[in-house]
Structure formats: structure tokens, C-alpha cells
Amino acid sequence: MTKQKTKKAVVKRMKLTKTGKVKFHHAFTSHIMVRRSTKRKRHLRRAAIVPGKTGVNLRMLLGGA
Image 1 (cartoon, rainbow, N blue to C red):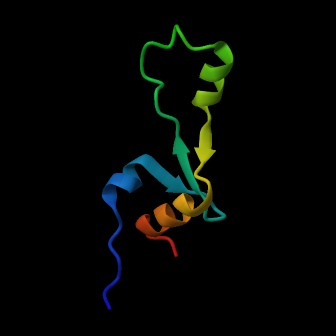
Image 2 (cartoon, rainbow, N blue to C red):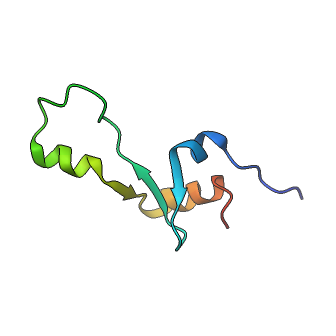
């Protein structure tokens, strides 16, 4: 059986942490930020971890075991 190829679209948007979790940056941060609260904008600046089974699936697409 051949090795699974890395999905380049996922590689460009996400990365693996040292412990194998998938880290990503939030969407909806490019423009029209005036209507959002300061708290929301501050939290959107930070990276986040993909939760649950979705994170496991993305880890496989990134080439991680």
C-alpha cells in the first residue's frame, strides 16, 4: 500500500504542534472589524487548536500519524 500524500491546501493553512495537535488561525479577521467587539478581535488574533475528531483527520492530511 502506498503512503498517503500530504494535502498541500491543509499545509498552507495549519501546522502541527510539538505534541501533535493541529494549530490554525481564525477566519473573519481581514476587514470590517469595526462592528466586532474589542474582546472578539483580541481572541481572533490568537491561534487555536482544532478539537476532537476533526483534528485527528487533519493530522492525517498533514502527514502526521
